Image (cartoon, rainbow, N blue to C red; front, side):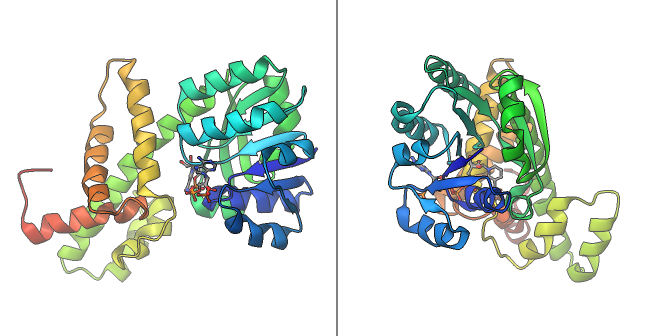
Length: 294
Ligand SMILES: NC(=O)c1ccc[n+]([C@@H]2O[C@H](COP(=O)([O-])OP(=O)(O)OC[C@H]3O[C@@H](n4cnc5c(N)ncnc54)[C@H](OP(=O)(O)O)[C@@H]3O)[C@@H](O)[C@H]2O)c1
């Protein structure tokens, strides 16, 4: 099996690296070509000129792009080049309706589609320890499982196409709660004049410890908000959660609050910061004594 990787950002480049290590990477492609050149050289793999060149040399095409419209644009350009029997796997976080529509269009060409969003962050991608939440035909998933296992600890099948994205939406609600809790607690700790260097390991190893706190806590306190996971991407994910929740006639407080907070920060130009830049707002609460509007 040879895999063609489309989208060499934070996540896609790490996935490509692990696919190459497993001997499964056939070619890579990135919209902004120069960003793919160094990686292609390092991995000793072809940087395809276009999507049809990438498709021609691979059995499985994997995508990892930002949002729904980006995936739709890539698939529209890729589709004429796909061959019967190929499998397309998307690892981006996008809407259920989007992946269902793509799967239906590709099925007409006898190309199978798997939605396979991931969790584990940039660190998990680098380490090859992501968790994959998959939706689609079970036999197709089994056929491509080695490609996903090249960068994942677990690959869990949740059902039809779209089920992977539903599982990922649940994860993103959890992410909203975790980032809210971490940034608020650390701003409180800092404003209390505590020795945060001493406090961090205590919190991390205590009952409320989390991987997020372990990975990001010290950086947040140092106000280092390099991504990681860009705030604009988590904001996009929470909009996807909202769409699913609307069909259940539900607003979730954490989702609504986090969207509001991110929009405030994105309007100030912080959308490309890591999502933990939410700390900026939490610090402000202590400097402005704002007790009314959250
Ligand atoms: N970062 C994380 O921790 C994390 C964790 C889990 C899931 N995810 C999800 O994984 C996906 C990728 O995230 P990331 O952090 O890797 O993002 P990123 O670093 O911003 O990379 C985005 C990639 O998508 C490409 N792209 C964007 N729009 C495109 C378009 N219209 N046509 C072709 N290529 C396009 C970009 O190409 P250019 O280089 O040309 O811009 C780049 O290669 C997102 O859906 C995100 O929500 C991210």
